[in-house]
Length: 112
Image 1 (tube, rainbow, N blue to C red):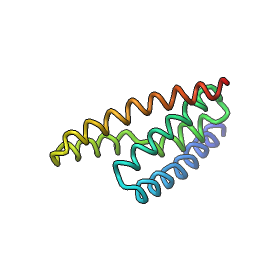
Image 2: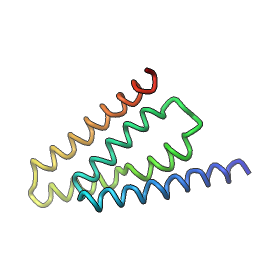
Image 3: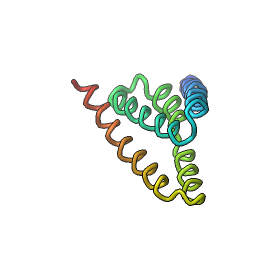
Image 4: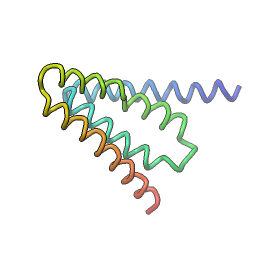
């Protein structure tokens, strides 16, 4: 029965995270939206990293659906394929560097 509750927590979080990602990307456009949800998700993940009470719903479910490596990868390839080489490189660098920085900031905020 515990597994059913855990799966429900992940599913509910994923449902909410996917909706939020769709809204953000729809309102801001692919490039800004994907960067925004990835960086925000990294910040929150860093903040929640040490708190197992929220792992299934918030981290695995919500943040797993909110931040998406497939959307990031697909958009980077689309930018590159369309000849927007500089934008593609900047997009990848911002996602990776800002995401890592946001995660570390989240860890710092949690411990302070």
